[in-house]
Image (cartoon, rainbow, N blue to C red):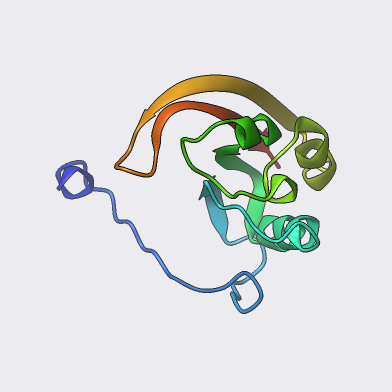
Length: 126
């Protein structure tokens, strides 16, 4: 296992956005990979997750952009569950640095995630 070879310990937990509880400012990095959520809860959940991030900590997010609605390579079929740059800027407006990039990529991730995909990537520093 790569983490073991590099002397890195990885802890993970499976929980819901509503129920997850951690100490404030506990984590150096939070990563959200294709973590789409109900549009009426997105901002609330993002704000909650960011309370767990230490000052100077890093957010990494990758998900489908709203342009993905025109593709058949996966993702939610509800455009409101897809991300826009404006929404993510609003969600993470308290960050000291925020870099958001929309791009296209070719997916080859199993039978339901094949072909051109419109993705959005975020790198933020709290």
